[in-house]
Amino acid sequence: MSLIRLAYASEATFNEKPVEQGVEPNVARILMTSRKNNAKTQIVGGLYYGDGCFFQYLEGEEEAVKELYERIAADDRHRTVTTLVEEPLSARTFSNWSMKYVPLSSDVQNFLDRHGMKSFQPLNFTRPLCEEMIQLIRDSSEQGRVVNHSELASSRKAASSGTSGIGIGLVVAGVAIVGALIYAATML
Ligand SMILES: Cc1cc2nc3c(=O)[nH]c(=O)nc-3n(C[C@H](O)[C@H](O)[C@H](O)COP(=O)(O)O)c2cc1C
View 1 (cartoon, rainbow, N blue to C red):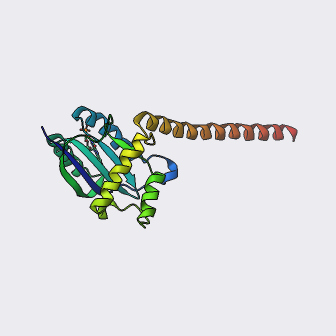
View 2: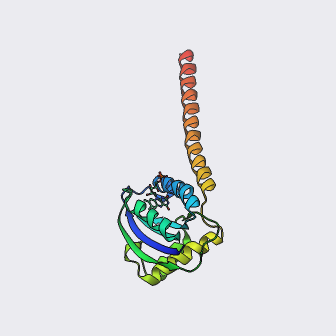
View 3: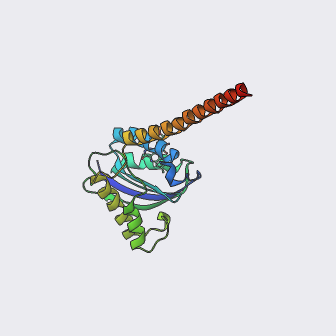
């Protein structure tokens, strides 16, 4: 049984949703599947999505990681899947997570600023930049700044209940206007 580590970058094929609108639904779906599957195969790592690009780091049993990577590479939600790091690993470096997710965070912005990059373009990352990204994913999760599955679900629920709140508000306003019109008509 041998362990390997693998990092790749790719470009999303779906149109990016504005960041203010919360977690991109395609990314949320990928995370849900990843957490379900990776826990079973004991693959750990992290996923970062920004500026229409993915950076993913995976570590685990060689066979399991290679099988997963083949499946990921064939996924039509992204293209130009480019392997950046692939090598043997002597011991696991991530603790109890199946797939960490780093939302657009100030850490990544600092990382981009430090290297004079205007946007997140991981396809061009050199080896040292990849290692920095992997460390960033590891650190941010250890400090509890990643969004986990239940947080994702509740933030999505909050977003949708916000919308239905607006819906109720509009209905109430509509009823009030109709009421005012009827009242005005009776005064004529
Ligand atoms: C950027 C990206 C990263 C992904 N990462 C994973 C992953 O870590 N684990 C996983 O099982 N699927 C991942 N997927 C999804 C797989 O391509 C595939 O859809 C999924 O494994 C199928 O799982 P299912 O047979 O349980 O539906 C990823 C897809 C994309 C586009």
